[in-house]
Image (cartoon, rainbow, N blue to C red; front, side):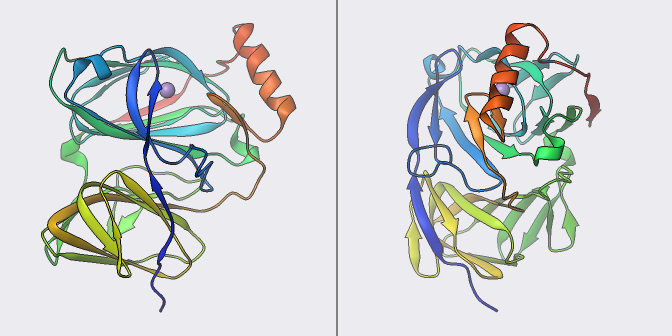
Length: 285
Ligand code: MN
């Protein structure tokens, strides 16, 4: 048994997205272009409506999955396939854009705290042009495990024999939201073949003796166990892992394909109104 240590520490960078939304980006920055199969991690969190009210009006995606986890606030999602989703505190949304989706993600509040994460998960070549799919689950449906003082919400994958609500067949994503009390500890076995990261959003954490501050992402080195400790103020973090795809990544904004030609195709399809090819299958609870 070997414990995973911190391979790379990535403090989140403040960037402006959508129509003028402030987000903290860690994966998808010059310090960490991607962490196969993950392409981007944005953490949004603000009490100031000026930083989120403009939202994300209609925009396209092709070639990957967006995974949105709301902590606080209310966003409304609408897409080209006819789905309308209400993202409320504690809820989660998995949107497989694949061959093409145009959607909007707009705040449904005029003030107050808006907080959450959006993770982009890559798709293997043979699924990039497959049909879109959509899963959405409200807070009450997400299993929560309490173990040795740790409170773990299982969004995707499995923890302590409890399965999460999101089914992510291609890269078998594990996505946990973990809250630890002061000086608490958390551990889980994690297949050595998986790329994994921890992102701390409250308090501070430590991995194998190395401290990890708030708003910092740590990529994890090799090993088959993850052990995270909390600092004196406790810790809250997401732990995410997935099966690497191992294929070339060519990205142009919201299009992520394997070759430059496929990116040019995506751009011309979008220009010609042909980006959206199929309606998604919808499952929501
Ligand atoms: Mn989007």
